[in-house]
Image 1 (cartoon, rainbow, N blue to C red):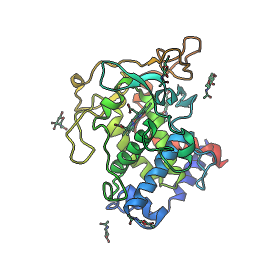
Image 2: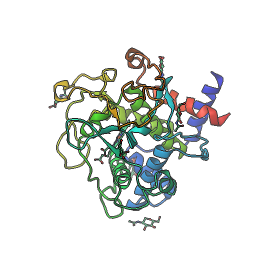
Image 3: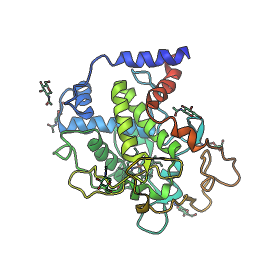
Length: 306
Ligand code: HEM
Ligand SMILES: *[C@@H]1O[C@H](CO)[C@@H](O)[C@H](O)[C@H]1NC(C)=O
Ligand SMILES: *[C@@H]1O[C@H](CO)[C@@H](O)[C@H](O)[C@H]1NC(C)=O
Ligand SMILES: *[C@@H]1O[C@H](CO)[C@@H](O)[C@H](O)[C@H]1NC(C)=O
Ligand SMILES: *[C@@H]1O[C@H](CO)[C@@H](O)[C@H](O)[C@H]1NC(C)=O
Ligand SMILES: *[C@@H]1O[C@H](CO)[C@@H](O)[C@H](O)[C@H]1NC(C)=O
Ligand SMILES: *[C@@H]1O[C@H](CO)[C@@H](O)[C@H](O)[C@H]1NC(C)=O
């Protein structure tokens, strides 16, 4: 208990300066970390954030925060096994290419972690990996309010508009989603983003994508409203203005051929020969959404601060 309080205290103390309310998270931290608040530097900031969220960091940064990374296999989120790697490496038939069910795609087809660790999206520019990672740069540039987004130096987003459509065959649940958001938050924390801003970003991600049946919404400038829920299983929270009738029945992804999938709590995705870990009931998560990010960050940081 003491270490938890200590960790939270240290984190809070590390963020002495305050972001003015008329400056976006993107603009503020671009100036703080890279000085010149221009398009190239804004994209660089988002690149740092996304790259570290995706592959983690091998050595804790100056902020002393260890980030496992979205691609790290055999993780846990709040006591439940999470493994997002099989959605990215083609082990699961979980990508939407317009059909009635998901297909297998390897998004780590262009150097995997090696170029990402060097600050690049991929080795080349014509791979699945390049497309996915550059789309994440642009999309997070929008979400974090980069003022120079779509200006020369920060290319605009040209991926799918509906986050529901993109993720619909993944059957993502509160643990998968929570782990993903936790990695984004830990990545930001590792670069010294203040706790108050981590909470704002975490809340924004939950509000936009973390509830099932969310009503039509628009995030990409000048695009039509579209369905945006990424957390779609029954145990995802639901909010007042929901439109479940617009969402299809959730399909659990199947393994691609005989691919080995371990460390997940999705029974149909996990190889028969390996044990599946149980997951907590949805009710447990329902009680604990708001304000939990502080706890999550503090818990994850305890390892490295002591
Ligand atoms: C806050 C949560 C999330 C956001 C904002 C987000 C955003 C995005 C964006 C912008 C894309 C690119 C879409 C395109 O290229 O058209 C994408 C693709 C993808 N995301 Fe997410 N994502 C989130 C959570 C997750 C989670 C929890 C997983 C877990 C496996 C995941 C797995 C993937 C995969 C595998 C793709 C590639 C899909 C494809 O090209 O078919 N995402 N995501
Ligand atoms: C934010 O507001 C302050 C005054 O409160 C002003 O000096 C500053 O120029 C504003 N910044 C932006 C980006 O509008
Ligand atoms: C942004 O500033 C950096 C120096 O901090 C410079 O190298 C870069 O060319 C500038 N980008 C633009 C689009 O002006
Ligand atoms: C995850 O755990 C399983 C079972 O313990 C193991 O076989 C597998 O190699 C692990 N995967 C990774 C990437 O560490
Ligand atoms: C609820 O969502 C619909 C779109 O599906 C929108 O037209 C309506 O304004 C929303 N109502 C509230 C109270 O947010
Ligand atoms: C899916 O499995 C098939 C055979 O089982 C294999 O040929 C193919 O490469 C796999 N796809 C991916 C993306 O790994
Ligand atoms: C984790 O789940 C437990 C219930 O099993 C709950 O009490 C706790 O608040 C949750 N923690 C977070 C960070 O969601």
